[in-house]
Length: 351
Image (cartoon, rainbow, N blue to C red; front, side):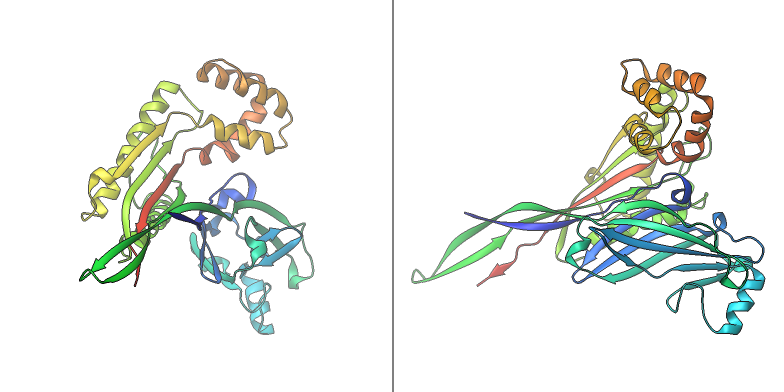
């Protein structure tokens, strides 16, 4: 028996405050010598003001090295015609350009970049730059961490079987048993207190499409065997814990039923679900990285041994301004669904 190391791709998705509010469904995947970056950008949240241009540039960074991907430019009416007369774009020749009045609500961003070793562990940022009249006046740049690309080694067993043919010829065939997983994150929106999935509601169309694309990549590959679709739904620490537990459970079950309805050829028993009533771990991670005035005191409450409803009440009542910021910039993104697609690669036989 011998062993080999197999690299797998981890899909990371993160959306938090500031620019992160406008981005969902971030996916980073590697295909050979290319790294693919996909996300849904809500352009209606980043529209320029009068005589302005907004340029959004995804950027990979690691160990002092950076790589920008194709930018997205959104132009006010005057700036659109200004750059049109120049025959150029504020973000360069590869820019995806939109006039403010005709910009879609959601842009399904999809870009490739040549892969280099330094990108293993690289962080993906979204940089926003606002240009004033004629591109001369600029505001300070804003940027937000979105995700991280990481390849993890996994041990895979390789067994060698001996086959006897006509009792004289021996053929050794090396069979590689390869198991891989693709991880993703979706932000499915529900009307208040509702548990039914509405594909056209808010950004659900883009979120569900990204999830189906991930599943399609597995089930439509003739060399891969689907083993499991694992789904875990979270509610945020807002409201009664008992209610959040019920909602998280029912909404996760609704997503399971939706996936089952989209893939009649998949055994429903392969779709496994879990839920977590309130995503306190996610809240803690956000607070720890934040600049909230009462960050340390809020962390003490989160780390305490009180019941969830007591913790929420203490934060809301003692630090109302911090709580308002959390309601706006953090809690919506704690209501999420993590999913993982497990699959095997069919036996490869070398004679």
